[in-house]
Image (cartoon, rainbow, N blue to C red; front, side, top):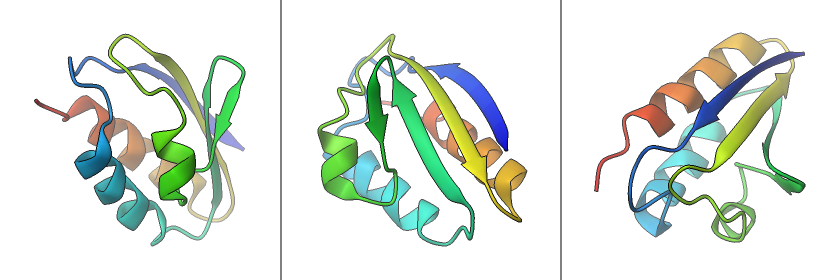
Length: 86
């Protein structure tokens, strides 16, 4: 298992458009991946899970993956979240 912690810096958080982009990106990975926002467990391969995950500005997230491309999966998700702009 590989994991990283990240904070959402985008004032708009992870709203519908970037959430859809993240789902499409995550579907390409072979690893099982989860995002934790406090006690909320989010499946980033499911748009409804992402949209219900309360991914707002300053949310502290733990991103973890298990599988053959786990490091790449987590690192790319973190890069994507870091690159979000309004």
